[in-house]
Length: 131
Image (cartoon, rainbow, N blue to C red; front, side, top):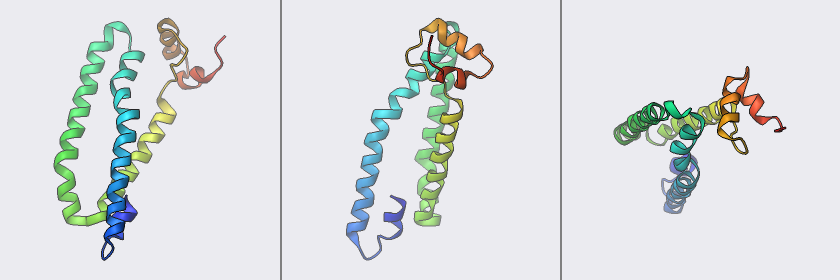
């Protein structure tokens, strides 16, 4: 999308392709990450911490939504297509954080997940074969 936006001058087809990429991204995001925003915290938090954890998660999501609503028009107005590079960096940072810190919970029951989080290295332990 960033490349299409950068090279759209004089070629409307490239601009249309950039818009198509935006919709592809939004569909993939809606089916993959949106459900995980509430599912993952409620799955990994202990029962007595879920309300606080989900409240904090909703606060952070709403703060990000405010920034994503009001900042991009200013950023695009000032730097044009280069503003999207910030999103590329942010997505790369997010992938790194997820890879290094998210614990795999598939196939574990709640008691085992609790033990995972109390282990020395929860991410590494969650990737070991279940006995």
